[in-house]
Image (cartoon, rainbow, N blue to C red; front, side):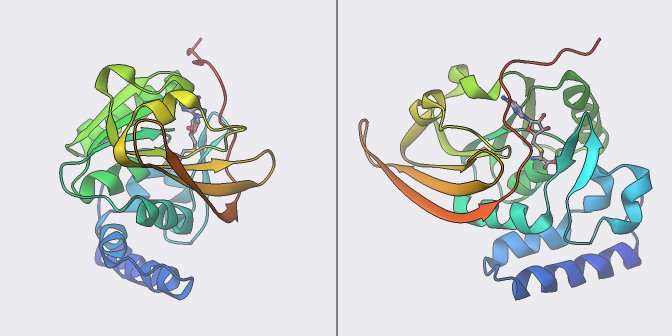
Amino acid sequence: MKDTYRHKGLRRQLVETLRQKGIRDERVLQAIEAIPRHFFLDKAFEEWAYQDKAFPIGNEQTISQPYTVAYQTALLNVQKREKILEIGTGSGYQATILAALGGRVYTIERQELLYKRTTKLLAQLKIGGIRTYLRDGYKGLAEFAPFEKILVTAGAEEIPEALKNQLKVGGVLVIPVGDKVQDMYKITRLSEQEYETKKLHQFRFVPFLKGVNKEE
Ligand code: SAH
């Protein structure tokens, strides 16, 4: 896979678009400028990789729109070496952005096909700092908890208790909640028992589904 000057130029324009749409976090913008999004898309969509749009990645799933990736990543405020749990590996693009910011990323996918494909891609691209798991994200990843940050990239009907429990005190969970349209929630764990919940802007995500979907 090649990252040409043309791709780099398109990424600079994308970053400008995101700035105009209100993304202010310079570290996040730098990560988006650095990571070739076209590596994570089907060849057929390569030409459109730097538009601010979501695209199909197979199994009726999509790679999130760059604006959404930037918005969620900015809310997480990732610091170097933090343990981050991502629910919904999908293409691996969001996980790669989190790793580029210095996070140690644990990412869960429920679709076996996507899990396998993305695990292979991340290895091929030699992207370090990301571990992939075929699991049901509703349950989180108890054996590696607690996490400083947890990011859900599918639209949930409710906030899973397991994910709140797997947050470190002081940690942050970012999750879109709702049926057809989702409100972005930022939940901060203040102590063992207390959480602060902030409801933010509206987005549209593919649904957060229960159970693992094995490849036939
Ligand atoms: N972060 C992804 C966007 C993926 S779209 C990217 O950067 O490309 C959301 C993903 O969440 C889909 O791949 C979907 O299969 C997955 N998903 C939905 N419900 C899930 C669950 N319960 N556990 C794990 N993954 C889930």
